[in-house]
Length: 80
Image 1 (cartoon, rainbow, N blue to C red):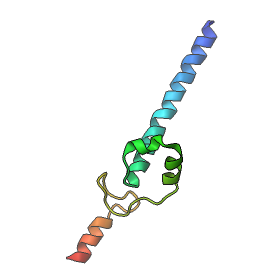
Image 2 (cartoon, rainbow, N blue to C red; image 1 turned 30 degrees about the horizontal axis):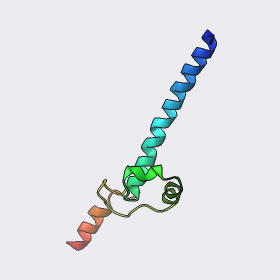
Image 3 (tube, helix red, strand yellow; image 1 turned 90 degrees about the vertical axis):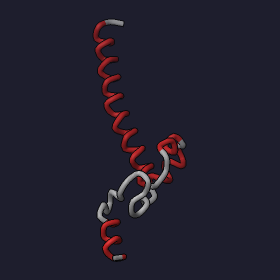
């Protein structure tokens, strides 16, 4: 390997890591949006199905609904 190939290999490796890490973070967040554990993203077909479904409404065990973060606050006022 000459010097240019080593540099090219290093740049492509850094780019791959720079793309992979945020992609995994988005996939985990999507799994949490639908109320599933992170490892469901490892199942290719199931992951595709979950990516196309609507997330849980309201707060789940992973936090508030990102599409409507005030939903629980609104429903709490309706009950009172």
